[in-house]
Image 1 (cartoon, rainbow, N blue to C red):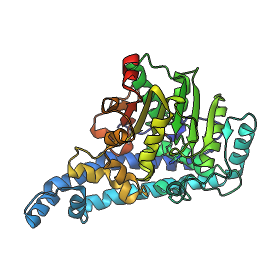
Image 2: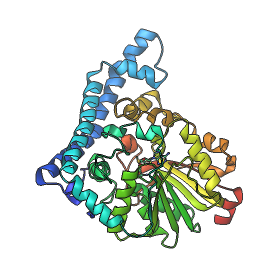
Image 3: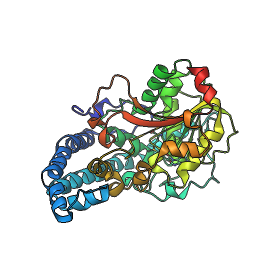
Image 4: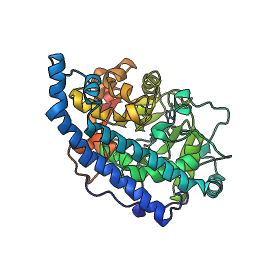
Length: 395
Ligand SMILES: C[S@@+](CC[C@H](N)C(=O)[O-])C[C@H]1O[C@@H](n2cnc3c(N)ncnc32)[C@H](O)[C@@H]1O
């Protein structure tokens, strides 16, 4: 993974909260702690499993541990895992605390800047009558107090500002200065695999701050792009951020990815980045069905996520399950144990239209091992073309 980038190097825009010297130092400590957890403590947990806990389990049960639950039971009292977990959890708690301290003292300034940038035009469409799905509004995702939808003051953008600043620290800048590695990875994959595919209408479901929407604008300057999210604060911040970066033609729309209210067959590309692990088991197939409905013949849906547990040994599943157990990601485990290609088939895509692939940010070299724990800009992706002849037409 290498040394994490300092927060000094983050891409600046009008909405980014200002961080003082000591606050930047704290954010950098968080980045280093995360790297330490992944690179130094993680291997110690593996050693404890290989050298002791797996054997103890075998002795007690007369067989190998068969799934991640049994590995969790075997590892519960292992000091290496306890230390790993404690440091990782505290790093996340600390990241949220530092972010709140930074944003808290400038919440009104940031709100006013967002208001000014969002004032003109009709590319930000919030719906005061819209009720975000409860699985979004009731969860404090990755320990973020109040979650994506929280509004501490009118037209609030505090949590998104915290998210933007803290994300960079959590991933040690591995998403690049604009934390947009997933969008760049998707563009790179499209260019390499389907150079003739030039989408005219693009939809980003669960766009958040639009980090990963903007690379699509750069790659496809003529496309109409719609970015949907359930959370008004995320959209306010994302829209203002885009404007301050000179992008004023992406439509940021409040809505539900499972029921967008957009016309059928109206998009060539419907994608998500890091959204599926934060959607409920019930919503997930509905989002896929909505993507199927929204695509034109020949259109593509693709979803960038962490790898699912299929085919992974129980210990690896157990390690990757950490966020589901300790990082307030209640849908994490359900997503990772889902058979997403089969789910795409169930919502109407043909077997030959569905695929799995890997999207990696350009110029990033990493081993499979480094993909772990979401700290490297490389993703498992699952997708489908709307019609078999779409592939023929494109390829
Ligand atoms: C982890 S963030 C990812 C944001 C963005 N795609 C990115 O790559 O940075 C997940 C986002 O999905 C949104 N979300 C989750 N479920 C949704 C739904 N059913 N409809 C719209 N947005 C949703 C959340 O509000 C949040 O902004």
